[in-house]
Image (cartoon, rainbow, N blue to C red; front, top):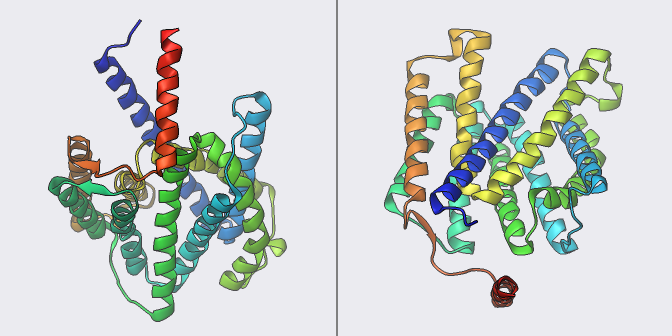
Length: 337
């Protein structure tokens, strides 16, 4: 039985929406748990905590592989090394940027990841954006900027940290999509390769970096039952956050992930209003939220139209194209047997 095109489109839309919702729920959830863990219980060791997140993710991939849900796959060591460097610089750069910069400049740096991701797609993937798609991205940037950017002060070392964080994060997210496409890896497969390397490197470097940033030693922290519960909860939610990020970027692109991902920023602001009162919510914040949501809806509509976002030429290597062609022909022959 051949499925009707409209039914396939509906199924794809349902899976896409589920992937986005999974990412939004886990991302907002981990922000709330980590905020409680750091602000209420004083566990300020962000890099070490991220290492624990990837350790839990590694455990998940090992269990799934043992159960047979994840098949063996191959990722060249050189590709894995580049990915881990980008990803770890992203984590460390973001933590240092947050410490050295004002909140306003930190938010501007986060917003600049969208144009940087666009540039990477244009240069490396030969992607062409329509005028409406470009304008919708500008509207999203404007709306989120109005919501989040307040005091803006810049210093040399803070600018360098932000620059490293922006470019490494953009490259890491681009590379998630690139590796899945080039090596035909599922999100679980890619996590199975990258999570152990990130966990080991971050747990090795994390305690020293956290001591440099906070002047506190993770080994001297006063662990108790409640704080341990929050650490385990944070690690558990992080598995979903890491997996959903790879699923979303694999299904869409780094730019789409960044644009629609700012919905999480708006949700965090709204939840802050409900949990902490009306202090953080005023007219210009509400206006920014409305502008950002309009921009996101416009982006989704504009980028999905023909010509809204298209590849000018296939950027994969010729050998890869030939391999793909031979696989397609093989599939057709199998179907005719």
